Every structure is written in structure tokens, then in C-alpha cells.
Length: 116
Image (cartoon, rainbow, N blue to C red; front, side):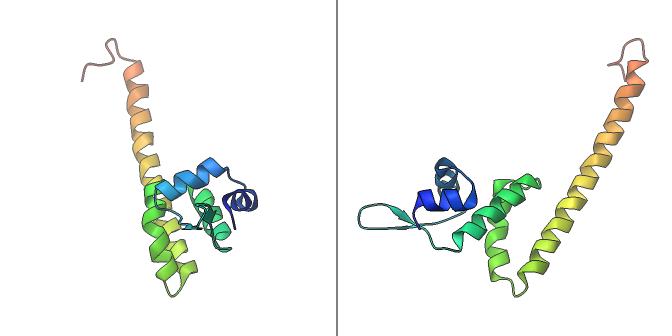
């Protein structure tokens, strides 16, 4: 499938697909005339990338996980573990932000809030 077909099937722009290709997230075969040719299963991979981004994964994290998921004997379990790890990271960050919020609120009541 050509880039326009993949863009339409996966609901992303052609520029997004070119960017993903530059980042090594997806790959296309080049025809003799230079057109990109993607396999049909690329739609699923692009949708995975978009969903993972929406769930807070960086493109670097996605790129690191794609090969591992594809090579896993149980891809569903591999994805589940990635989600668990991301959730733990988010919960840790939320705790850190909560502590920071508390400290900022306490400092608002001080005469000079930046003094230790």
C-alpha cells in the first residue's frame, strides 16, 4: 500500500508517516520509481504507535518496545507489562508532584517564600 492509503487507513497524515519512518518506527520498501510501499499490517503498527503516544509513551519508548513485542511469544502479555510499568512510573511521578504541591502551598504562607 502507498503512503496515502496507509495515511487514510490509519487516520494519520503523510507527514506523520514520514516522521515515523525517519525515527525508525516504521519501514517501507521503495519501488523502482521511489514510491513507498507498505505492507498491509503496517496499519496495525501505526495505530499501536498512536495509541501508545496517547497513553503517554514517548516515541523513544515506543521504538524500544516494538521489536520486543513483535518477537515476544505472547505479545498481549508484553504490552500488558509495558502498561503496568508505565502506570507505576506515572504513579511515582504523581506522588512527587503531590509532595511538590504541598511544599509550594506551605511556602505561600511565608514572608519570604524562597527562604529554606
